[in-house]
Image (cartoon, rainbow, N blue to C red; front, side, top):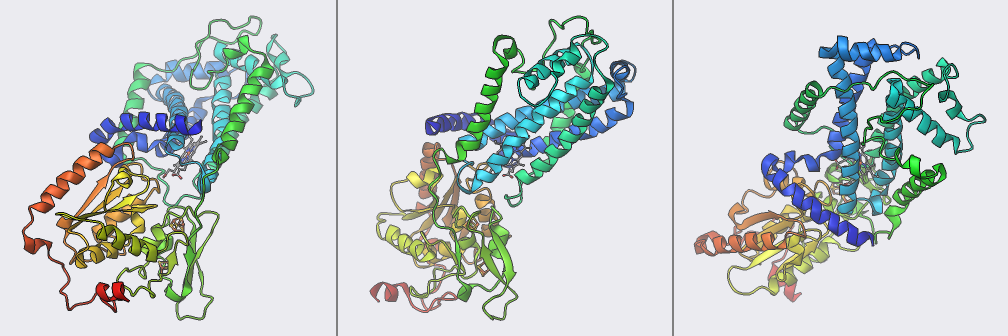
Length: 529
Ligand code: HEM
Ligand code: SF4
Ligand code: SF4
């Protein structure tokens, strides 16, 4: 069932993201920056909250007046800050919901990713607690409504000896101490939320926690504009003698409150518990079939740390050398974090297909899909090609290229292919051109595979694609598995372009007598041996 919902949602996201991609570019697309925007809005909430605290009176008698003073008398700075505080908090909820749905739709929550998913669960609870306690502090009619409904809900749990809802049903019963507790919670819970947000991204390398500057600036300007145009206001002083009727709700934080008028408190807790349980179980419904984690072969590891640099999941640590080789460090894989994306294989300087068959071992490899197998599959795919021009497709299994019928070498991620594999293909004349086909550019399944591939090709990141490799014979196509038709169009256009190249342009970049580093036998020798 999850599978059907997931692909439906994914289709929806891809449709929404396309115009944003065109407008902002894949790097700046806000839908691909939801986590980073969540952090950004958190900082706006924090700064505006600190500012408001200068003017806010934490005593129950004067809280409402101080908020009125902020809103009306000091509207041009403190009032704007109040609105910023409210609207940025609302946007945090929006980011949270859409981010959760997007990670789910892209299947980014199972396998080794369970940690980020599961730490998202306390984020939901803490964010809502922060928002709800915030509404309490204004001490207006909405605060009264929220206070009564929340305390009735809490009274359903066997936590408090005395029912706390009693505090809000008559004047004189509410103690300042209780109000002070709410003020304390409204400060302490967001601090704890920030801590959990930090834990949330602990197992991700280079998490995006800052949106691109243009996006941040546009979001801030829009927020200030809305704050001036439609300032956040209070809804009249609390009157504990009267039950609050007809209060305006904040639908981001309080969508369940009207439900409490129709459902029993037990049923509302049941709904919240079921939702929380479902989020907690989802990474294992069904569990992702996991390939064996990457393994280090010390005989081929020189401790260069490129694999640790490139792993998107913090699964590799450099540790002190254990085999007496004259290198200071060696790579060590944490099997529980490894998703077997193979990006480390593509990063290792020992991963060169030019090596002899029996010597085709590398510093770090995937037991289920070793570099040796990648070379064998490349040779087999090349042998199956006919006609002109012959195109080999190095395709990420999560993208559209994996569905192409001929000449495809499927990989867990395009960045598993070391750049020397392309050199190998073209210099051995296995094909006239190579297509590197990944996921959609702003949604790389393995987070950094596309970025690393582009940087390696542009000679900005080790291992470089050698200068001698003719760039015009390489194409990159980034297309999600739902964009098969676009992929085929771009592939056909590239094939037509390659077909126009003069024969000299299609000649091997490597003279027949020259052998690439690490190569000791010709391919013909290897094939016949
Ligand atoms: C406002 C609250 C949240 C913020 C600010 C936030 C922030 C982030 C950030 C910055 C990342 C790293 C993105 C990247 O660089 O690839 C991330 C990843 C992730 N988040 Fe959240 N998150 C929030 C809530 C949630 C919730 C509620 C869930 C789900 C229950 C969730 C699930 C995930 C998952 C599964 C990943 C890992 C994605 C991957 O491995 O590619 N997040 N989050
Ligand atoms: S296979 Fe991927 S997740 Fe595992 S260690 Fe290598 S780069 Fe990291
Ligand atoms: S990239 Fe290869 S050589 Fe470098 S540390 Fe990792 S396994 Fe060792």
